[in-house]
Length: 75
Image 1 (tube, helix red, strand yellow):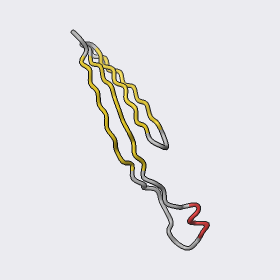
Image 2: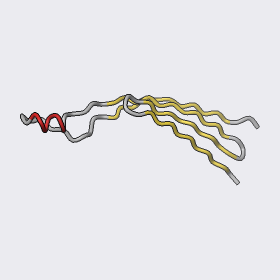
Image 3: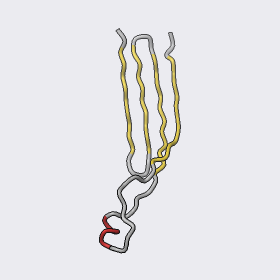
Image 4: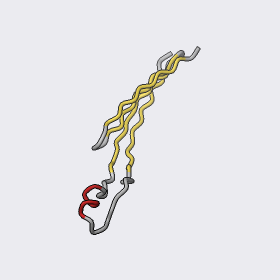
């Protein structure tokens, strides 16, 4: 039996949710200034065989890149 192949792709927005300050104190503004929204691009590949499944995914953004691998065995 040939493996079942799954492909997935998408994008998502990670909005700014850090604590920020908007007053006249320039020191507090420098330390607690507002952040930015970040767009993430994600993609994945899955292979399902009779006895096991293997999945690989990536999530790419300006701040951090993440790679995830999953292995499932059926018995």
